Length: 369
Image 1 (spheres, rainbow, N blue to C red):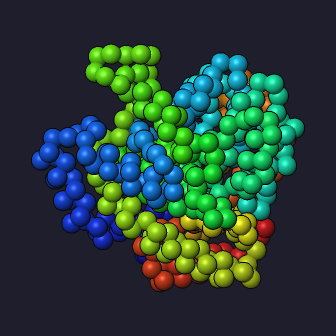
Image 2 (cartoon, one colour):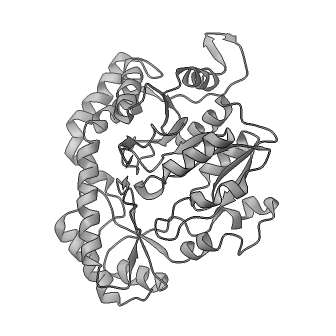
């Protein structure tokens, strides 16, 4: 039986094995395991890729969000508007900083933040908006930025799934006040372990992040504030440098795969995620909606096709956020979408034959919307 994974990490490694192995060996030989030339080089290269002036590497994507919030001075008593249809890291960072997440609903077609609902959620305690560029597509940033500027709010892009995506002519990461990336292994740009990054055109903000992330210190054993330990290690930076050179090509392959899926599923009852005409997605995930999700997953598994659900339970309905007292039905679009979504295999190295197997299994299942 064919085994088609959701993410083919080893297929990717086989293509770049010699360069990756050489990069790792170089770091080990140099003994620059924390900081060092590879970290500095990656920060410069990724900043340039995102079309911003500055980048700082950190330990993971969750830390990136937390550090950005803290560097912006957001903390106790403050509120941050975001969505419930995301991974819990988005809101963990908000609460770790001492602030409160305030959820608004999403648009059903793109499954991204609905900008029309932002203003009604703003209070005197609101300090920031975190739009989540989910599945590799940017949110509708023009209205979000306009509302934020009018109300004096900061915009923190959660770009953990959007490496290389664009809104109009702007890269994800270059639109808000600051942006946060995860380099978790399965991302479009993934390390071989945990890693993250923060990008911005605000050099002072990036410098504050550096201080907080390095135990509140700019000089060894001299600590101006209490910080945390969140640094990108050199081996991960070296691996990311190898991969960054191929990211645009890999994203182009993802777009080709997405086009194949969309065309092949046109006459089925499956509903793929919609793409806003002003967005250029990078298809971190390819997500469809169906009321027959459980049956479809079983059929695909029988045919050797792996699937996922991103994400099965909206954050406001998780036990972790019961203290917020948000009842079921409060975010109807989010809750409806979460009950129907299914992620199909999506990675650059998928072959045409593998894509055909996935589609054949999908169409044979005869599911309904």
